[in-house]
Amino acid sequence: MSSQSLYRRWRPQDFSEVVGQEHVSRTLQNALREGRISHAYLFAGPRGTGKTSMARILAKAVNCLNDNVNLRPDNTCPVCVAINEGRSIDLIEIDAASNTSVDDVRDLRDKVAFRPSESRYKVYIIDEVHMLSNAAFNALLKTLEEPPEHVIFVLATTEPHKIPATILSRCQRFDFRPLSVAEIEGRLAFIAEREGVEAEKSALTLIARNARGSMRDAITMLDQAIAFGESKLTREQILDMLGAVDESKIVVIVDAMLDGDRRRGLELLHSVAERGIDPQQLAGQIVDFLRDLMLLKAGGSSLLSRSKSEIQEMEPLAEKANLRSIISSIRNFEEAFKSKAALGHPDLPLEIAFLSSTPSAQPTTALSKPLKPTEEPDRQPRLESKSGPAGSKVTPSAPISETNVKQRILTELKKRDIMLQAIMRSGKVLKSTDGEFVVGFKSRFHKQKMETEKARSAMAEVLKSIFGKKTKFEVILLTGNEPPANLQVDFSHSNKMPSDPVVSYLIEKHGGALSRAQGNPTEDENED
Image (cartoon, rainbow, N blue to C red; front, side, top):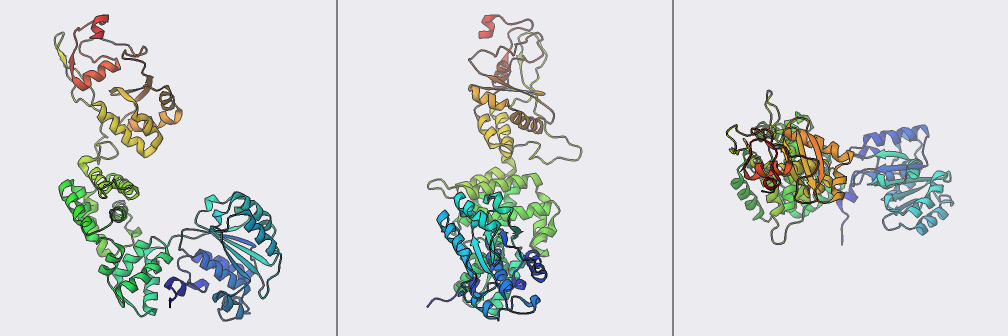
């Protein structure tokens, strides 16, 4: 014989029992007292935050037979008892995910006209209403706009942006927020006590964090944990049940990452993986920890759902870390969390995220390198020639390859516009000097895309972050091996680099000697 699950057994039965949504409870209770009941409500918010429970409580409150409106719902009158037991025919719950067609809504519309059998109002709760088809929404619109006086609609959704504006404008909207760790933990402790289960506070905290704002998910995990650990719940049992790793291991991994100790970090990752921990789960835990580290570094320690001792343990890492590098690392591990592992290498996304987050692996741009108060952002080194006799070799002071320049630009573009990043990959860097940047494309389509106002604006920001100053950005079309007609070669001074982008690029990448100190090259020299 199956027993009732905990989340159903401990479902809120009145407004005071709904955790974390006091703004909704207070507004609905005031409307009840003043007799200002709306004909349509929209409850929007993440899953497991109390939307359907609040809708059922509202259905009881508007139909409760208690004369004292402040005590509604009292859960003792025949109407409240019938709703609690699931046998009230005046409360109709519809799952829009499985009743999406226009015929389903037309059937609902035909039945709306019938008066309630034993209550003041017929209450229709339509869950996941965003799943209705456009035709179904249109069929519902007229009824929702002018329903009979004895009907109340409550629409619940996790994706309100998918609901047509014509529907939204006819509902009173209430947004349900994700619950905090402290709120979830308090409710779990209450349920565990009532169930006669002894639970460590750290075990309940771990469940609350993994619930990610969903009370229903947390209670479901508690139900599973009780079955897993019987009458005593410990942190170790919850870690085993969730397939998670203890946070002390996360601290050591992040410490190795901040120190740039690749070998130690990889060894730690593999030692955790050998215990059977899911790499995706580990990536998610690292993201959670880095997020808290970011808030601590930014001075938001009051926003953390952690004890004072836990925050004190994190402070040395926060002092060692750079805020921008933490943000970059969060992005890397988010990608690992979303990525599918390569065939035969389930740890590969995690390894790439770790190596990309070590200081030595990050590009030393103005966004990733910590700046001292008197220090300006890194500037792109310029190519300068040493003065000497004619024919002397022109040596760049700090040569930078096309690959290095391009990679830095691609890294910055990824943060702004992934489409521009993809187009830039096909480009060829022809000139990269202080104050001017030229890139060529073989495709006319790609050239036109990079010449749009949006692309130029993004490139202006990227080049400024790399060079530390405003840099002229030019796009040309590559039609052959010859230098572009609009960029002339200038050898008028032996102690200057040529202005031609192709020659500049070749000297920058390979080094070279100028055969003449003055004048313009002949055709033969240019071909050489």
